[in-house]
Length: 193
Image 1 (cartoon, rainbow, N blue to C red):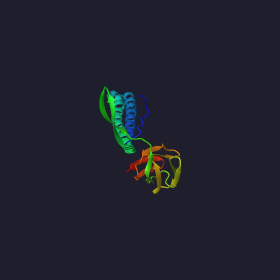
Image 2: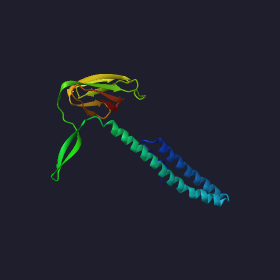
Image 3: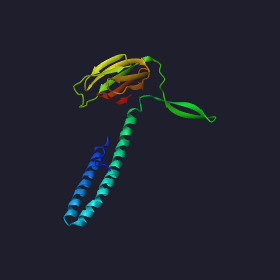
Image 4: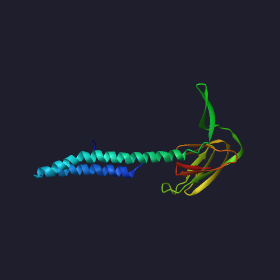
């Protein structure tokens, strides 16, 4: 058993519950030792018996809250990237049976009509005054401040936006399509078609 509390990345509540339960266990230990030393053995033993309750109960409670928060965060992350590529149906042959499957359509080709990509830098406290450089397909680049946008045009179906410190974001556009990509400083935040 460690005295240090567990830090839950996506749930401040779970971290707080874990830290408070550890603090209560330490207080129960100290008060139990004090009571045993001052002829109040019954209270001391009861306090010492509460130590595992605080440790184990606090861990279980904070773990369940932390896992729910992690699942909610993972769901939001998967929704954020869900519409970057359209889905197409392909027929796969398994055991001499044709089975339809849905896969992301990542076929790269030239577009007949250029697509318009609007890059929007949403409001955030971090890096509010800084201009962040965004690059489309390692060719076109722009610097955008908070609450500003920039319009790119492209004739490629598969495109990639990169920033200096963030992960590259790849996505597909169709002929003449207009899409909005939202960023918070370096992090991709979502796409609107």
